[in-house]
Image (cartoon, rainbow, N blue to C red):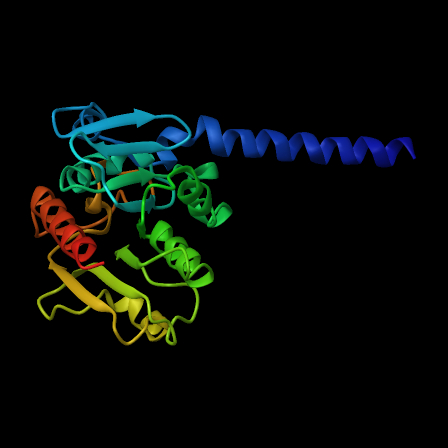
Length: 247
């Protein structure tokens, strides 16, 4: 009996040390870090008031927005790396709520949007958006809560659920080659999108450049983008705000 407990304690110790190493010691290498440009966008200015707490909230400084956007970050990135494009979307007149995720993986908390919606009853119309894994989990939330969400924006992502019968307004903003098609590795998953999905290609774009990041290990060997990162951000923001205006 004592030997069994010693073995179990040994296993627990090894797992604890391993998990601790993976999520702390190795974090700087694992996670894509926010750039100084992104961190600067966390400051309030004449157009947008930024508050940081459970969520990072970007509120237009003038007027009372009636539309809001909930944003789920991609996996293994510092969520603050999306501050600049979300600041710019808020400047166009929308409440924007960036939702940090447990262990920086949206798969662990896909229903966080319900808490945001409950916290802002003054918002009449909600859209949800996300990048990469965050986009897939945003789509999952929209699929399972159709009465809460008027529109879905995916930044270089595809849905995890079969949404072919959904009547939700959907816009997929994605990197592409000269054909304008989504990335080839996404093709087997696109059948899950509803037929009314609007595709917006960003020719020459790069997956990580929907935000402002110093690449972690997952993205360190990506090829040099053909599209200037600032132009990619500007086009993604423009396509997102255009979509929000239609809701």
